[in-house]
Image 1 (tube, rainbow, N blue to C red):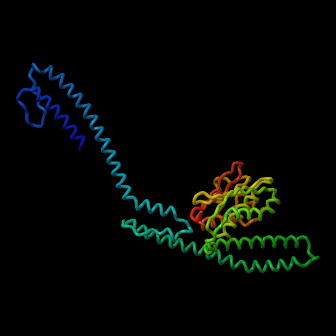
Image 2: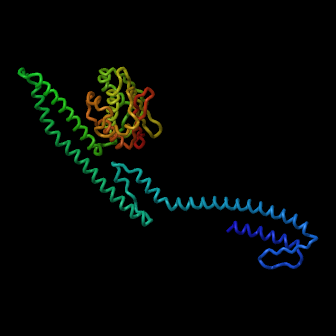
Image 3: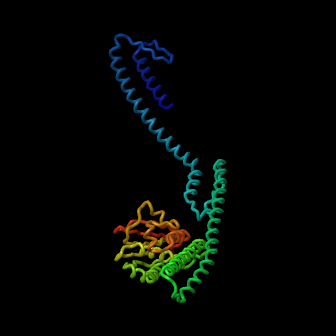
Length: 359
């Protein structure tokens, strides 16, 4: 509309220029009427050509300015209107991004004024309830299975201990090898069941202890020193004062698992460096080794239960494949985060950050 009015204005100005040079027989219609006396034609032609050129330039400039201004104004208005209209969808999307298997009860969508979104929110909340029930059944099954396995494993261990405590001179090499294998596998199953029980009971563990993280790191390094000496690994602690609120037992287990994992999968004559410090309201913990590292595409999967990067080497080193899965669960229940990076020497760095419970 503005461009149209702009064009009409300049056409009218041309008509005025013609009429000003014409005789008194003016045409009052909307059409341009040209009536120029012969003695004024040359003068009119010069002035009219200049007028046409100027009007063309002005029309082009003003039309461009009008278009740009209206486009900017329309864009700003559209941005704010669409932003306001899409805010419920954006909030809905942000809420979905925060959903994890462990915080389903905190991820419910509140009632929305938009009818369509409100119905979507209701369906979403029902889906969360079904997922929560499914995860709870899974956790309960894991706990029940672990509890049921403890009794036969304990009986087997007692029988094996009784058998090993007595001498059996008539046993041949195959029998001794079988007894040794059964004892090792029974011990492995016992450790697996204990870890599964620990993972299923994490939610019920109190997390209101005042934890001095640097002291826990020193304790872990002292406890794992014999294993490090056996593997020819040097343990280095670089810790500053760091205090947080959580479960003293679980944080010890977290540090222990990370350092033990770094020792087992390190190179001979390598080293493990543990760093802990506090900055503002965050507590940071990192465990770095000088091993072969973990490929980028597998760094998220190492936290999956029973996943192993190198299956053949993992069997030689023992373990049940639940250490890092337990670490991630401990980090989660303390509202922290954990990531894996490559070390300067090609090894692996596990970085843990606690934000919610730091002091």
